[in-house]
Length: 421
Length: 142
Image 1: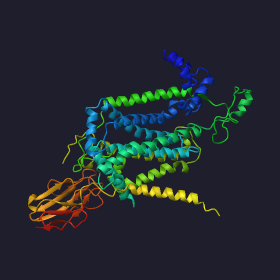
Image 2: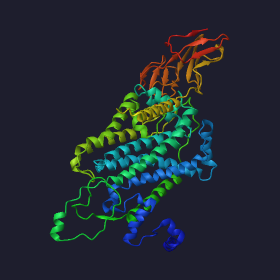
Image 3: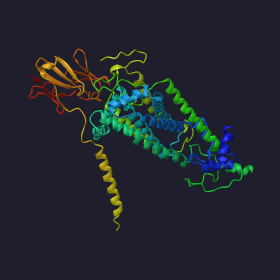
Image 4: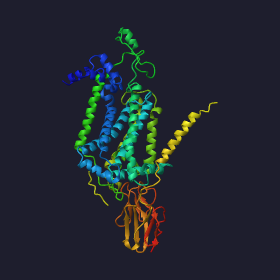
């Protein structure tokens, strides 16, 4: 029924002017729809069937893209009610919760999608690392990925202040003070970030502008390059094709006849020369339908979270009384745990070293071993080092999240915390 | 020899724009509590510690002696709590503990809490100057 109506529309004069091809019925049309539609031409006409297997990527990159879209849509809607000034910001939060139709739901969706995005970026990075997908020629796309990771944290951190509640105020106070430990420029960075010496109206306005304009624009720009490069670098990383040319001749099997046209210029020599026929399928419908399914699942997942769990909102920010314990956002709690021992080491040295190591990784580890294979046995050292860092940060984050109580004393999650003042 | 004047002009114009934009981000006027604060008369405060939430310091009164100590933790800027028996201060964020003189006794704080000079204005009101620091022993006797 739906299909029939669509076909009818596409074959009408107006429909043809918009969609050109309509619902493809033959391979020729499947190829044509791939290049004639703006949205579909972003992906190749044919993709490796290996890339479509769920366990190749767990769909993490796509899920992140969808979470970003959800965040843009819900974020823009929230902007209609939010005012970035200390007195009004908290009131707009209350309005969204109790007065605005679906305000609470949108705020919840925005909050949970943001948390999921931080988690997703980490998992996506793990996937790329453990499958060796950052190796040449994909080095620079890994670097862009690291910058996208930082932008995600920056977006999340700037968004954290906007409700102007106790949680927001103290997380940003602590976070901004960490930057003042950076050598030489630390105090200046803190001053320009907050637009003053304390977290006040100018800090809120600055965080707002960063959160709704600068960082999302940078993110959208880099996401576009990130996706474009995935394709230019030859699609998802996969093991080198076995050279089957002898076998082909031995069996006297001629590949099916194909005609070729110049579609684009890609790096290196043509991959098709001297190799067996590739195991590819048409993007329409194989890739496109999986993408749509994943989009629906992502939206449904965020919606379920938003319906059953409310985003926290504490009391109005009070500079005189930090909550006890005052905690940064969860993804910074590993760092806060380190900072609790030494602000300079935990807040500056360790994060800087980790970041430099992440950016340098594809330029240090360039051997083409184990590309496209999960936990390749040829990459034991690299996997060991990465895993140790990952596990350490995870353990620190868990300790900071649930094992730290009032006065940052060690506690157990099932212990009832009595707040002392 | 090519001077490449056009390119140099472009480099200069871009650098100047970037420099001006960076300078633009540093505000010249701050809408924040003043760092010199005029409090009430000495008799208006009880013995012991009085907390000033906006400026975040404790005014300590002992009979006729006045001192002022910062309530901002030197670690990451949380507001410290005074321990109930007056034996010192405790930061709720990362567990730094300071003794009654503001010195660090445990925790990650890198230095002692700051003490500010307390003076008397002409109209006999207390003035706390948070732009300067003094030793914990220095006090105003009225």
